[in-house]
Image 1 (cartoon, rainbow, N blue to C red):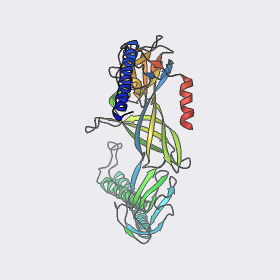
Image 2: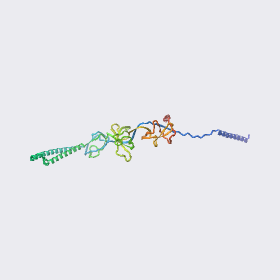
Image 3: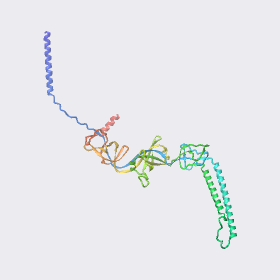
Amino acid sequence: MSPRKKRLIHFGISAVLIVMGVVGLLVLTASKPEMKKRKPPAPVPMVRTIQTKGGPKTVYIRGEGTVRPLREITLVPEVGGKVVDVSPALVNGGVFSKGDTLLQIDPVDYELAVTLAEAKVKDAESRLELAEEEALAAVEEWRLLYQDSSNEDKKPPALVAKEPQLAAARAGLEADKADLSKALLNLERTKLKAPFAGRVGEEKVDVGQYVSPGQSLGTLYSTEAAEILVPLEGGDLFWFDVPAFTSTDGRGAPAVVRASIAGRELSWPGKVVRTEGRLDERTRMIHVIVQVDKPYARKPPLVFGLFVTVEIEGRKIENAAIIPRGTLHQGNVVWVLDQESRLRFQKVEVARIQGDEVLVTKGLADGENVITTPLKAVTDGMSVRKASEESGHRNQQSAAK
């Protein structure tokens, strides 16, 4: 067979195959069902909910402040002299009781002053006694010379009875007694005694040092009670009793003081006792004073200068529900899940927001499903699906693995 004939045969076979392929493609295209356009279903967001439970709820007002002593004084002498003795308690942080002698000034000069004053008093008593005897003798002599029936009841003149001399002697005695009292008082003041039980905040004196009246020798503070100054907004004071401010019977609200000290979280019972005399002009806050009795009675103590958190127990709301703060949206609106799995906007009445909780008094019934999941775009009545506890449990297990 010639090469030309072979090429013709190959060409014919190729043409037949091409025609058969085109025909087959046309047959397949004609028999293919027509595709219908459909909109994909809108995704239904999954949400988590909590059930509300109404009932009586107590309002708690929280604040912070620094512990300070109820009383703090500067230790100063009223007389001068050399210090001859210092109590072991008169050191920074030292503990003392009421009436303890903290410091002794050399009393020799003051003892001598007492001795001189006593001698002056005795001399004045002798002079008064002599003046009284002279006055009696003068009166008796006058009566012997001038006594008659007409002058029987008449008194002698003041000069004759030496009344001015007697008055001067009595005044001199009183003055000398006053000097003696002052000398005794100065002698007593050589001992500086503690006016209350407490601790030493600062000490600036030692044995051998000369001190003068009015000189600062240290700082003492009382440990009978501690105070915490808590700045609060004016609206917060509506919820609890403050003596002479919101309460007329002198009753203050109870409080709990909490602090972290020595690696432990501790608490102390306290009470609201008063407010400061004026509003803070810079912060527009009212400073409430909470008092804690015997802050050093337990160990570790509620030391002065410690920064603490104060929780004041306020009024009780008869019927309220507590929801997380994140579930409250603008305009006091809460998202709730109805029986048809639809999100509904619910207007509520908020009594107070405290920390991460919101106290709701109206707008939520018992057992209402409040949506806690944050959603970017929401509409009233939109469909949602509730996350089941089983799926949540499976998610927690998978996350744990």
